[in-house]
Image (cartoon, rainbow over all chains, first blue to last red; front, side, top):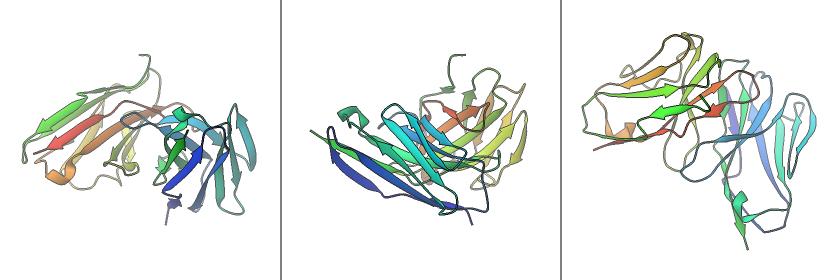
Length: 109
Length: 112
């Protein structure tokens, strides 16, 4: 079947680094994406990995290892505004985006 | 337009009534998606359009749900004979590239 798994909650303090893991089961996909969603808001795109390795976009980095069916989102220099839910999602060969259950990140002062 | 627009933003309806939700995607985006998100939950895939055709309707939860897209633009999601379990936020997204989907603010549907 198709599925993704993420931790339900992560807590960290301002200025710290946090890693949100995502494992998946699928027969194949084009790439793994990450989205951020604040309470009451729409999901917004953060990062995409088409190939194995690390992609860096400012304070956010994302990693993919297809051989391990694993990816992660790394958030550095955490800020209070980073408190949100984070979703990994894979592109199901252009048919649709399959989303994980989401990880709720709480950043403490 | 500048972004994906959904209307109405909020809808309260009585159980058993039909509702129609509208999505205006970003101009030129060929792919359009509908998702449902219950409170505190993830995004549940409903249907995907490529142009005006829907190659994947596998996520529609029952035959009370239907969707159409016209002119490779506006899409409507119709829920007939609404039930309380239909209460959720319905999100529409459009995309041009595989990597990134742009989401609207959603329609919060409450069935009473």
